[in-house]
Image 1 (spheres, rainbow, N blue to C red):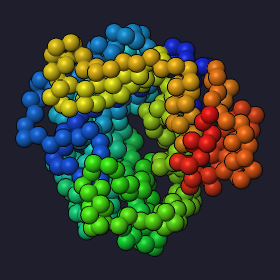
Image 2 (spheres, rainbow, N blue to C red):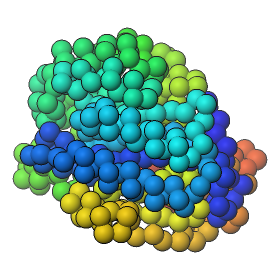
Image 3 (cartoon, rainbow, N blue to C red):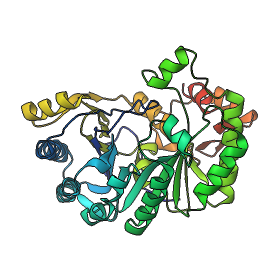
Image 4 (tube, one colour):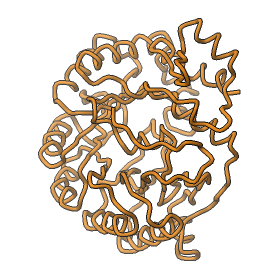
Length: 385
């Protein structure tokens, strides 16, 4: 697994590589399961948005000058709708503001529509070297149910095009869908693994408040998969990806050794990351940053203040430790408790969970076991004092 420098104490100002997240909030349509900060607009003033993002970026860079930059991640929304020239300008600005690693990872999320796939070559020329495709399913009926704008044929073409243009490729699938059998998921996952990508993000369908799916559940028109079936599907997922050489290095993410998402590892290992654009969050030097969420409010704030910050809050050592544990225990590698100045771990609860085979504590390394991963959401509140 890729090793990144980690801080010795979470309340220290970090000197390791930064991760930069750039949020593009616009989508062609809103998917019924999505609770991300995404918006549908009839038109976007591309020049105004580029200038605002550059200003937001420059402001953050002024607060952490000289830091090494390990990764850039364009997320959304649908960042593959951005003009490649905008992507290139933001990458150029970032590597000029900070000190880019020789092997900097630059990821862009993309929808696998034919229109967006046609931009992949230009995006690669702009500097993107890793793509993350929102395939979500290899079945047209399911894609329609999920509100996706592409079909299976477009997804296959986009996947081939991505592999031709980007050095590293990942794609997403959603499983534990209503009515999905274990056999159906085994076949779909086997097909996904056959494409030979180095990374897969495999998410169980969750019903998030405020989404169209949540409304359908409340109306009795949609019945989510029950917990036992979801657990069975999770176990199948772990078994098949392990066998294929893409073990789960995080609860929902699977990769060949060395192909883990370095950007996301920064989050899960609680390193410093900068977030710009509407609704983007950041953690730098013990500070939590939040930007205005609505696109119009964010761009107005940048025009007014030179940045899109809505709030900047100092986190206590206990708050940082709690966040680090919540993030780090999602990783197969777990967390090193020696890293924390005041590890807020309930030792009695940890010992009890260890006896149940749900966690292990070897020296100062705390890990969730494979059995415990199924119960992660229930285990975390018990571990954190």
